[in-house]
Amino acid sequence: MSTELRDRFFALSTGRAEAGEVARYCAEVDAVDAEPVATLDGLAISWHPTVRHKAVRFVDAERIEAGARELFARPSEAAPHLAAVFVDPRELSFRTYENVLPLDHLFEDAGLEFELTDRETLATDAYSFSLGLPAAARARLERLDSLGLYVPPLNAASRGGDRFIFHSALLAGALTEAVTAALPQLDGFSHVNPVFRCNRFEPDDANFHRHLDTPYYDAARGHVSRYTVLLYLTGGSAAPVLDLAGGAALEEIGPFTCVIFDQRYEHEGAPYRDGRKVFLRTELIFTDPDVTHDPEIGALFSKACYWTGESVFAPELARHADACYDKVAAAHWTGLVPGAPREPFVHKRFRDVDFVANGHDFWFAKDEGVSLAECAAITLLDYFNCKLGDTPFRALCDADVIEADGTAWISGYLQERRGGSAVTPFDKSVLFPEPEERDDLCCPFHEGPRFDATRNEEIVGLYTRAQTFAKAHITPAPILMLGEEVMLDPDKFVVQGNLIHVLGKEALTPVNFAACWNSGGFPENYIEVGADVGVVHLLVPPIVFTESATGYHLQFDFFRNSWMVKHRQATVPVPTINDQDPELVEDDPQSPWLDAVDPALVAGGRRERTADLWWAGDSPLIDELYDSAG
Image (cartoon, rainbow, N blue to C red; front, top):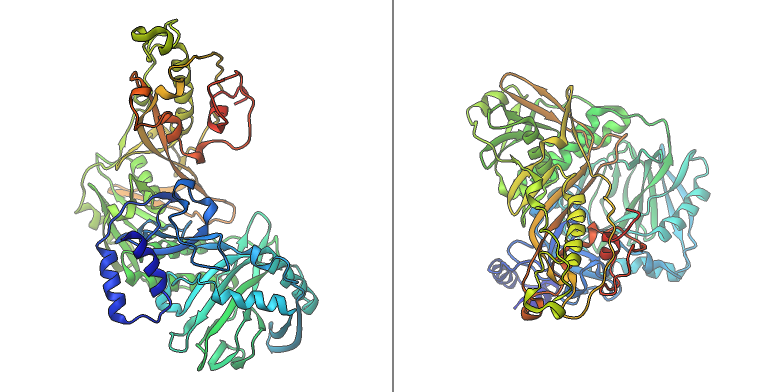
């Protein structure tokens, strides 16, 4: 049945199925709640749709675990390297909203020799061109529409149509050369952004509403986008095809027309009257080291991202997200314009803790059972939508949307709902008990009944290295999850003045070892998983807070230009020694702890071991455990 659900999804995605057939299919999907088979980019992935996993994404199949890879469909004949996966939209965070596909291979050997000709000035800093290109390159671009990679965007209600996002350095490079030749007056022009949005509109689709494109910015390189590039792959007429507010309104456009305009222009577009409208969007990137940062713009962008994620639970928040994105885009050029005082907030209850948030500000009532570190931990879990066990944090919260004028109401609102603690301090040392005293017995083959795995020299040696590895990933983590139980290390939340610093990961500790074994089992057979501990390592700016008599107000600006934010979540297995003979347990893995270690935790590259471990295979993890250089 799972295979049928997978295959029917793509058969029905053509849009030609009757409404009744689609409704029956949706009902069948809602009756299936199968567990996902793998994890990718922090998202649990299923190879067929289920009641939870309904959002389709496309990923490079080689990134899926080998044991599950063949279960996933390859729906695009022209892009067979892409597998379709289904994810739970509740798990999305700002890191995973967009699904950027690698499509450089599509343009290899395509003869990407582009020329922009027939220049017309539509308005100040707005131009149209005809794109001249070889037939082979034209065919590759036209093929984009037939790849079957379109998915509804998160803001589908306001933008209309379908789209997919892809990356192609080859296509961007060819366009960069063409733009450089056609618009030599663009001082500081660096390159065309290699991330493209492929948009498709059918005649009966809704318009792409009036909006501003959010500029791309990279503080590390001093890069900022200033112009939008639209490349129309199909031609047609509409009312209008493209309307630049205060500039031109194009009623008709030919295939392979390229329009380039300053991103200060608000614009909108309608579907063609007859036929499919397909176009690519990207932008021109400039080098501009003098760009400055406005903290209020960063705060508003944080809210926009937060409302995008919350709209999965409360669809009415999508319009607020769109409004915030537009305000941010305008503010990059003209500064923030004061808006209406009424804005949305979300009140959440996580277990016994109530808080109010808007994506940049998080308010908590002061309570004897809730520490400032706990408030910071809950804020991090919520903002990054971290998983507790298999469930995203936001799905574990009771939530309701509140629209209000200002924030004066929040303190009294939370005081009426004071509860208890939800995130408790935890002593990490209990996960790592000291091993038993070692004996000088050899191995189960030679010692027979006298053999004791918990005291064997080599097993205890591997156990201590496994502990060292686990400690290196668990000890620095400010937040731990044992299943759905959340715990924190208060020592990792350092308060200085009005800032909360969240301490990050430390270096691994080197350990040395050398020994040998005989038949009857190997040391790794006896090292079991004592517990799976979810860890969250965060490299984030300090959290600004203010304290009043009744509560805490925490503020984030994860998008400050001077910061690059990183976030990684993984599960660390804690080792324990099992004295049972692995030869007698046929169904169990022969190397349970080694097999359970998340590959993302293991350092890349080959290392030189400090001992010749004849029982160890070609394993990066073994290399790291026995690495003398750390």
